[in-house]
Image (cartoon, rainbow, N blue to C red; front, side):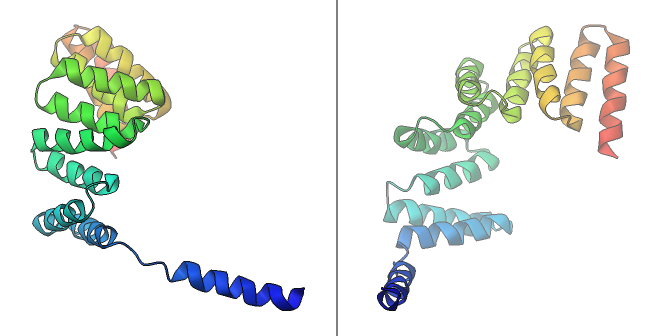
Amino acid sequence: MKKFLIPLICLLVAACSSVPVSKSSEYLAKGEMYYKTGRVQKALKYFNKAVAEDPYNAEAYLSRGTLLYSAGEYDKAIDDFGVVLDSDKNVPELYSALGAAYAAKGEYAKAREALLKSLELYPANVAALNSLGGIYYSTGNYNAAIKEYDKALALRPVYQIYYMRGVCYEKLGMTQEAEADFKAAEALEN
């Protein structure tokens, strides 16, 4: 029996390692490499090729959407994130990205809806909590912003979140609390 088992395992390993990588996946990998090295236009070119080669490659849409968001092309990013959501509605980070894109456009109701969906799927999503706090801050609801920043800080103390909570306290005239947060932010920054 052992005599046949080793050749069978070798055959299976060889067969699995010879599975061709799709052209779309190759383009996606090249795009990711260019994006990580700061060559945005080259990255976009390869993300576009990946999507053209396989219109069902959700990873390609997600990567291209992320690049478009960082380039300030929020509508296009939202479209790409929407394509990914059509294939999988259970990705909390995707809802966070969608919420950030809507918020950047000033569409706070849609942003809030996406961020709440993200938090429904993953309540410990610090990015979503921080973005939700930012929406409340942008709309002048400083108390609600503070509540979201409190939740985020309980999960992960981050310089920017302390700073933003401090700004909210300052807007509410709570100078002692603001000073304490600015000191905490400064301590984390160094």
